[in-house]
Length: 594
Image 1: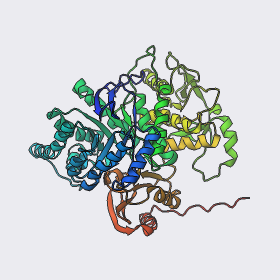
Image 2 (image 1 turned 60 degrees about the horizontal axis):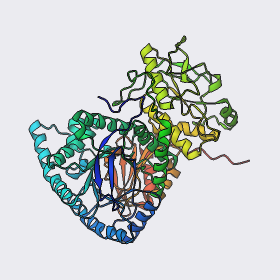
Image 3 (image 1 turned 135 degrees about the vertical axis):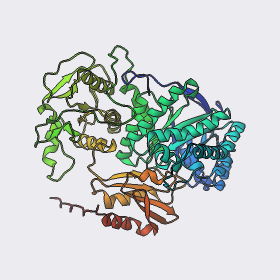
Image 4 (image 1 turned 90 degrees about the vertical axis):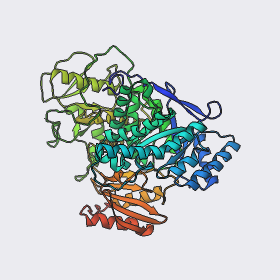
C-alpha cells in the first residue's frame, strides 16, 4: 500500500472536491488541488449568542476560514440558527461546523442551520463502556444495521439542505464494538470511519470529509497514512478530502511542537485539505500557527525528480525504530544507537554558551558536541562509502535537498548497503543571512525532526535553526518528548477549550502545571469534558476531567476513581492521587539568587 506519491518527492494528494456552504456567498470548495484551509473552534457557551458571534468575528478577522461550534444538546443546536442569523446581519458568512458527539437529535437540528455537521463515529450511535465481548459476524452486521438506522436521517437531511459532514474519528473514543474487533489501532480508527462513509455513499451522499485525530502525533500520522492508502485502494471515487489535527495538543511550545509534528509531516507528504492547531489558548492564536505552518511547507519539501528512487527504509503504518549499532559519543561515557535513547547533540558554539549553566541534576543538557564526534557527512543523492560501522552518519550541509528528503534518502541508502550506522539528524542543512524568527524555527525543527523520528529514523538530533543556545537545547528535548521518543519532564494532554468545557482550561492547566511540572515521566490529561473519550487518557497516568459545573472527576488511566470533587479542591486532590500511586516526588528547592 502507498500513502503518498513518494517519500522522497512531493506531490499534493488530489482529493475529490466537496462544497462547504454556497461558493460565492461565503462558502467554499474544499479538496482537489485547492489551498489548505485554516479552521478553529469557539470557546464560548453556545447559548451565549453575543459571545459566540463576537468570537466568530474575531476568528474571521485573523484569517479563520471555517469556524466550529459545539452543539452538545438540541437546545444548543437550535441556537445555532440565532448565531448564524446574527453573523449574516453583520456581513459575516463564514462556514459554521456544528460539533456533535452523543446526540443524533442535536445533529438533525444543527443541519438545518449550519454548513457542516461533525460527527464522531465512536459516540454518535454507540456508548463507551470498555466492555469486552466477542461479536459473531451476524451480531456485528446487526450492529451496523443499528448504526445505519441512527445515521441515515442525518445523511438525508444533509442532502436536502446541501450540507457537508465531517466524519471525525477520535483515537480516544472508538466504540467497544470496534475496539473488540480491531483494537485500539489505526486500523480500528479507519474502519470506524468507513462504516459511516459506506452508509453515506449507499444513499448517494459524497459531500463529506474525514479526520483521524489523536493526542499522540505518531498514532495520528499512522492513522492518516493508513486512511489514505485504503482510500487509494478503493479508487478515485473514494478520494475524499481530509481534515488534519492533533487533538488535545496543549499550550505554548508543547502544543505547537506536537501539532507541527503531526500536521506538518503529513502536509510535507502532500496529505491534508483543512487543518486545525488545537491549543489550550485563545482560539485566534491557533490561526497564527496554522498560517505559519502552511507557509513553511514549500520550504521543506522536494519537488525534484532527479534523485534515486529507492525502497523506503521504514514501515509508514507501524512505528519501528531503525536498527543501528551502538557507538560512543565521547562525552561522559554517553552512547547512542542500538537500544540507547535518542541523544541531543549541540554545536561547539552552543556548548560554550550553556556548559557553565548546567547543574549536576539537570535533565536538559548537551550529550555530545558536534565538532568532537566521529561523524561522516555525505550527500545521500550520490553513492558513498562507509569504512567504519561505529561511525555516526549525517547529511552534509549544503546538499541541494530539503532535510526530510535527504535523511529519508540517507536511511534508504544505508538499508540498500546493509549498513547499521547510527544517524545524526539535523533540522536544517543550510542557513540564510538572517536567523529564523523563534516561532518559525520552532515549527521548522518540529516538522523536520518530528517527521523523521516518527518514521523511526534517527539516533541523535541537532537543532540549529533556533539561534538561541539555551532555547535550541530545550527545543531539542521538547521535540523528543512530543514525538514520544524520550521523557524528561511531565507530559500533559490538554484539550482546547470549547462550549462543552466545564472549567477555565487555561487557568486550571496553569495551576496543575505549577504543582506537577517537576514530575519527570508522569503523564497527566486535563480535559474540560469527556467527549473525546476516556480512551484518549489510556496512556496517561492521571486525568483531571470536568464532570459537571464546578465538579471534577479524577482518573487513573482510563478509569474514573474520584467523582464530583469541588473545583477549589481538585488540584490538591489530584496531587494526593498521584502520591497514593507512588508517582509523587517533592520538587527540588529553588536556589536563592546571588
